[in-house]
Length: 462
Ligand code: URA
Image 1 (cartoon, rainbow, N blue to C red):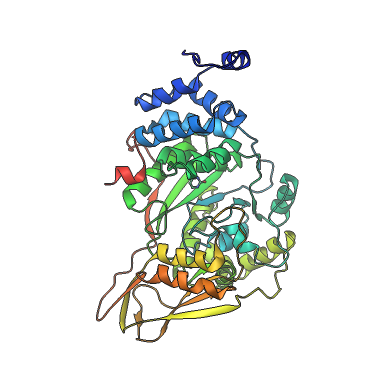
Image 2 (cartoon, rainbow, N blue to C red; image 1 turned 135 degrees about the vertical axis):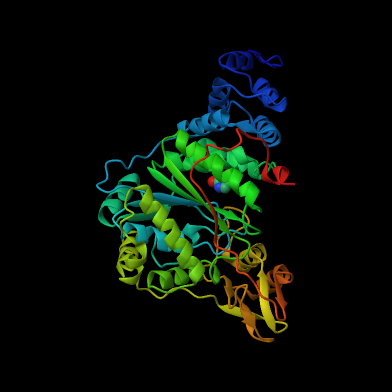
């Protein structure tokens, strides 16, 4: 073991000597393309959380991991070390089985809202710890906070009580779950190291496993509006996460789903709540309904409840009943009028023909610039801001008809939103569009995967 050699004082020498490993030695191991030992991983994650490993050292290690990858043992150990940095929740004493879903995030992805009450209506408990949006992808908590009175800060006891009584909870993850990930994610964000598959997979799975989930269904988004821009990198991420679940005893299945075009017809906060209510009422856009039902079936199958058809629970209103109970239990007024944006502006079709492309990233950036999202995590969001789509790829449009409606409380935001939409769509005369399937692949067993996850998605897929 290499001990620290450059020291500036007695106190520093003694504190360095008390540590089991040396940060520079760990960085050099990965920099030179070697594998980290279990002891090195446990130590570096713990020492970073304690403030002993400095941010610049962890940045260097994250970059070495991005460039040289990690094997399955390393990723699994890294995930366990992040879980061990905080508390673990346990829902095993509940009277119903639990099932959980995680989406890697996309534009218009409101599926958690109808999905949690839908699965709960099938007698399976859904403890859904969610986050806020950052950048062009929306956050479930931001959407739900557009409902008057609704609050996301529940204690563990509140969650247990609500899961027993109502069956579904959507709330904020406390700071005690995988605190190492919180620190590391912030660091990756500012050091160009977010896009490392081992780090993305361990970040997501450490939180999910620490949440005490028994079974997990992953929705890995693929396309312009997603982290993973192509199927190959999305498959690699999905397989890595399925492996991590297996190693931790959590049955994990991943659906790879399209995010080249936004999901549904809305991207924003309150407008996504309204679209979710349409789904719960038995209507809603077909892609949102299809994905919600596919994820619900996976969650039910995982806990042996594939005898129940979730479509029946949308049709008979029982999923809507659970939604109302879930919103009320968290202080929300499920009957209250929802807020609306103060200003709107229309983007019209410049020509007649078939809409052949509507780019998810451009729509997401427009919604964000209108005020639906935040640039820094402390920024507020507008409940009413966002983009309503009046056509999706494959639809015929006529010159001059509304294509998009932009919504905001601050009209000086329209210009920048329109800028992001300048190249967002194509209309072609007489075109035939084969609509891309919403579900592109399913990954449940990883026995045939490559053993080493070598680099970031953009690097592996050139
Ligand atoms: N979501 C996470 O929680 N972590 C990542 O690293 C990426 C997306």
